[in-house]
Every structure is written in C-alpha cells, then in structure tokens.
Image (cartoon, rainbow, N blue to C red; front, side):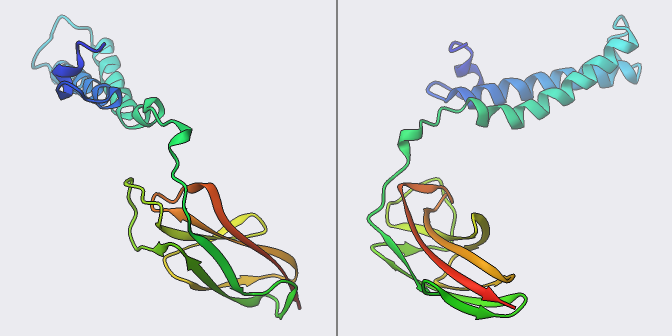
Length: 185
C-alpha cells in the first residue's frame, strides 16, 4: 500500500490521508460510470443493475472516506500532555445548601498555573485549556470562563470541575476538583 501513497498525497503522507484520497477517487470513478450508464451516454455493455450497484458503491466510498480515517489514524494513548495547572472550586463549598426546585447554583473557579483560551485546537499546550463542569458525573457545561451557573433539582450532588486541554480531552493525569453540595426544595 505504501507505494500508492505518493500517488495519492505525496511521499510521507499518513495512511489515513492516502485512504481518504483513494476512496474519493474510487467514488468519483464509480459515480461517473454509474451516471454515464444510467443516462445511456456510455458504458452500454454494463448492465443497468450493475450501474445501480456502482452508484451504491460510490456512496459507500464517500461515507467510508469520512468515517474510516479517524478509526485507522494512529493515536497512541501515551501522547496526552500533562499540565502543572490546578483547578479549585471556590463556590459552591463542600456541604453548602441551596434552596429551590430547581435551585440556581452559582459556580466560581480558580485556575492556577494555566489559562483558559477561547479556541479549540489539536496543537496541545500544557498550560492552555477549557473547563468542563460535571454534576453527578454528567457533563453540564463546557466553559471558557471561571464563572458559571447550573440549575439542579433537590438532592445531594457532586460537582466536578475539570481543566482539559484545548482539544477538550483530559490531561494525563487529570486536573480535576470536586465538591459535594445539597439542594432542598
């Protein structure tokens, strides 16, 4: 397969780019063949059912060109950056009680050793990221700031604030802070 990669994307291209290019070229060829035969403008020896099959294969190639490369792209798990940043939940505090059904819970955070940036990127820097807020293990907000608000039903809840890399995936080790609070109706 490596001898075909220069044809598709030039020497040194990753495998996923070559696969995408080859699938799109195949989709173009199959689609053209099907179009010409079904319009009776060419490929008259090709049976019409085979032309419909070529059209279906062309569609499948386009779908595979979009979905297959992320699956085959080499992404070693050990490439996650670490961060020296720390996240602290200033409010709510542990065991704080809020009233309402649902209650409006203000959230204030402090990030030390890192900064929140308003963009997403695959170029990962250990001191740049975003904040993800979880209530009872469910993601409730992806924030580009240190102040937020969530609405929570009565009960005991766990709030987690995680400082994540600019690609929205966690650092290794994770930079996370947790508090437990209560809401009464």
